[in-house]
Image (cartoon, rainbow, N blue to C red):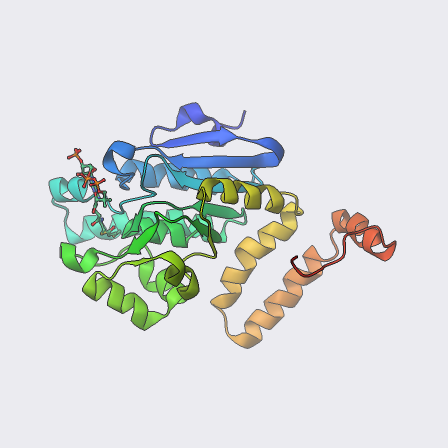
Length: 268
Ligand code: 1HE
């Protein structure tokens, strides 16, 4: 077994393998509400840096206990009494982890519940799809804690809900939940039952796509959003040239041409 997917090599993360290359990665420190300490971030970097080459086709990212993630481990941070230089490097490791997630090419579906706050929202926003349930709530309490964001909220949360809503969340500690959170873009799905069940259903579906297609969707789109329109169009043509001519796609294209493939129909 590739060490990257060996659960015994992780302390803060629980890993379970499912059919067809689907893995559930669970933040496993419920007694601390899955607060992100240095060890957890290093383990996220290790898993998401090696996942694709280890054959992982899709990931459901979850939290053990009642809360997805309480953000930065404030107690570790307080005890360490870090210098600016030290904390800048903490932030750079967070960026390493979250960039590996967003740009790594492996689809990540976050199953959200309870608190998705501060760095927990930054972590969730590095996933490609977010599913919330009726217990889920989102906040950026940094302003109240006397600190600032450091794990990409200025980029990804602004991207999801707009700059001024993100600023309001940090300034005032505003909490979003329920349908409003979906309408604003904090999650793409809201379920009455278990967000885990819906995330598993979506991940199983996504894992059936060709891996190179998923790589493009879960890497190229983010890169292209960082480019000028002209450069993004050029890059899209380039990626399309490679992905849309992959030999593995021919059987699916042939099935369409032969009228054996499913047609796209409206929801019933
Ligand atoms: C923690 C943390 C944490 C809980 N760091 N230890 N994030 C926040 O400001 C959110 C802080 N947490 C909370 O508001 C609440 O804990 C929760 C709403 C998430 C959960 O409430 P509750 O009543 O279920 O739990 P609790 O009693 O508050 O906490 C249970 C334990 O988890 C307790 O430890 P214990 O040893 O006393 O039992 C808490 O100390 C511990 N715990 N949250 C450390 N965050 C790169 S910059 C990112 C900046 C940020 O993320 S700022 C946002 C930080």
